[in-house]
Amino acid sequence: MSSDHLTRRGLLQGSAALAAASPVAAQAQAAAVATPRRNGGSAMMPVELTVNGREVHLQLDPRTSLLDTLREHLHLTGTKKGCDHGQCGACTVIVEGRRINSCLTLAVMHDGESITTIEGLGTPDKLHPMQKAFIVHDGYQCGYCTPGQICSAVAVLDEIKAGIPSHATTELNDVSLNDAELRERMSGNICRCAAYPNIIAAMRDVAGEKVA
Image 1 (cartoon, helix red, strand yellow):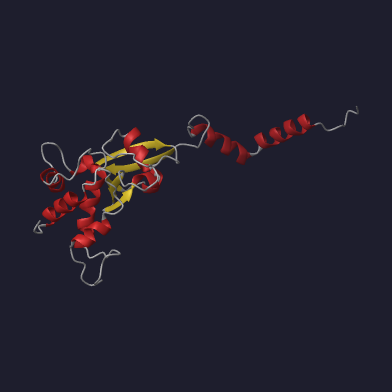
Image 2 (cartoon, rainbow, N blue to C red; image 1 turned 90 degrees about the vertical axis):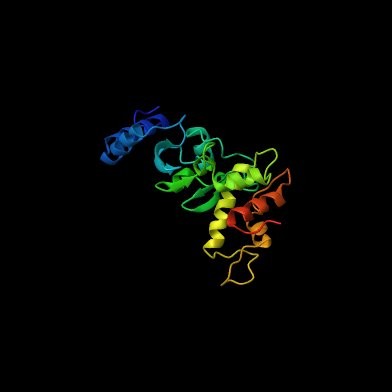
């Protein structure tokens, strides 16, 4: 074999040497070393959230859902993982005043935002009015969906108060509080125990409406 024959190994070694000599490559290598990685996966990213009034600073895999961040990293297990596909509403939390399914969004997408979970609505010693109403009207049975139901119910009343229409709204200029509106807006929160009439009664109670 001639001495000037270029082997695959030689080509790779030469390319690596040239890359290492490049200032751009050196900067990229330094950044890779400085950025922690989880088991060779995606680079971790800094995320700052205000959760239930408390600022938290985290280093997260950018693929981490907001639900897993709350449960696994912040140990706020009141927010439940039900279907993990955005179909049951058990993971509903309030972000910047709007209710969302936390299983369908990434934590990094909410950097700098304010999040309220069921733990932030009230405490055992000082319950939120919606929590009290759920107890009074038996708005739960097994209780698994209840944190999401309550967070969603709180946000729904705020939506109606702000005049935000739904598919059940008949007059866009006059968003009224009625059972059809409440049922439509709460339809994304599934209760396998079928406590729906009691949930509606609890919401009407909090809204100051007469409960039949």
